[in-house]
Amino acid sequence: MTFKDLGLAAPILDALEGLGYSNPTPIQQQAIPILLKRKDLLGVAQTGTGKTAAFGIPILHHLYEAKKQNGTNGGHSNKRKIKALIVTPTRELAIQIGESITDYGKYTGIRNTVIFGGVKQGKQVNTLKNGVDILVATPGRLLDLMNQGFITLRDIEFAVLDEADQMLDMGFIHDIKKIIAKLPSQRQSLFFSATMPKDIVALSRKILGDFEQVSIQPEQATAEKVEQGVYFVSKKNKTKLLVHLLEEHPRDSVLVFSRTKHGANKIVKKLDQAGIRSAAIHGNKSQTARQKALGAFKEGKLKVLVATDIAARGIDVEELALVINFDLPNVSETYVHRIGRTGRASASGIALSFCDVEERAYLRDIEKLIKQEVPKMPEHPFTDSDEDAQEPAHQPRKPRNSNQSRNNNRNRNRNRNSNRSANSNNRNSRRRSGNKGSENRS
Image 1 (tube, rainbow, N blue to C red):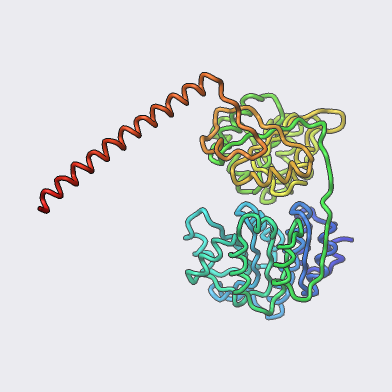
Image 2: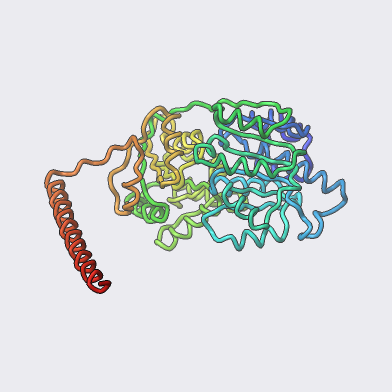
């Protein structure tokens, strides 16, 4: 089966061809025909199975066909109404989905935007005022802008809840219920989850009408030949740690993975400032630029290549010494694919990952899939004091030496004695003040 066999609109097929997409993945083969019939769908699948295209392409198709039927180009920008809502738990995944929707809808004239918390809302609000057709959002920022009157869901025709089990784990259940309550009853609903616990089943029944179900089992893979390691590092120090590691491996070919295109460009810029030559390949780069960078990397003229997962699919370098996950992937199978770029054939390889506080859940999922703990790397120059306090439960703290423990105990005792003395002085002071007050009142 090819994408042409699915009966998709010509502009979408042109965009997919430009991206190098010809044959749909299993979830796309099963989900797209269902969604083109406007039926509700419950999908059980990991992110790395091609799920974004599975729900994004049919939505774009419906919106484009409606626009063509109405004989408009989307109308005046300020008259555009949000027709499709995609809710996802993290800003990283929201950005990734937004980039994919942009790629698939490149020639349709359909507008999308992404909103998430942790940043000022001004630019997001201005984009919304200019009008969008598809909105990708994290729950908190969505409700915030709804409460401020910048977003209404009354015109929604397509609602997607992505990574539902992760949202429940992150405590978004009450936000999700509030969002669902604001959706119009007449809509097509798409509900995706990696697992199906009872809470997810109960929630899906509240969202979906007469739905069909698609379940794609995650592929199992191992990477025994690859030496793995994880650095716990704050997000702001990731670039410093990357520069440090690259300076320790100046002669090695290193493939650095970024979760987003914007992130890949930012990494290259930071490396350039540090005097390290690198190049990025991702969907926004022209085919010529991508081939040039990849060719230089394969020939050894370029030692550092920064890539997103989609762009990295065609990378096959025989003697790739090191893979670095600058961002941990939000799907475990992607991690296996990434580290599999090294250690090919009979060769061995090294895969190092950076993990900030927000990515700990991803690490646990990865370790569950590969059925082993990823070894924690030794202390590095860029550890953050907050990182030690938030180590994963399976990582024991390093024992302090006996001298350090004794010194710490002495310091605690001194502080305790000092506090007792201060409290005693405060009580005596209050008594003296009280006596003076009594004298004044009398």
